[in-house]
Image (tube, rainbow, N blue to C red; front, side, top):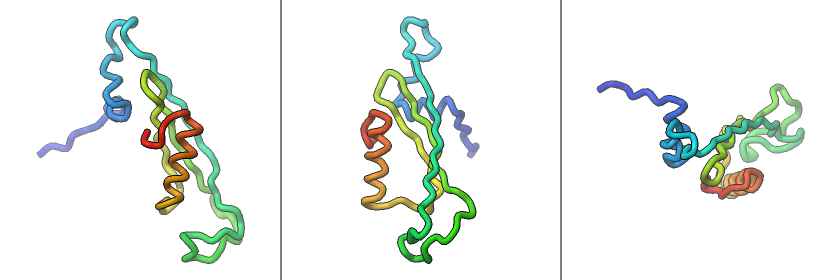
Length: 111
């Protein structure tokens, strides 16, 4: 069995729910898409417990932690893709992240 290669265009197409299908057709029928990137420092403040309290609180910052991603804007509601320098974001914290990011991007948490 041969490994399938996925291009950036394929990934964006899938994330946009297939909306990129019409890109490349007649200019009058093609929706316009915009990609906005972002990076923000999400380093916990000094003294904050780490890893859900399993580790001692942070006493110094060796490397800042970031959230990086992009917002795909086009014919449908915006789609946000974000990665974080955290081990995990779960439960209530995950829901709060999704809602805050969706609100900032003007979309729904499911997108």
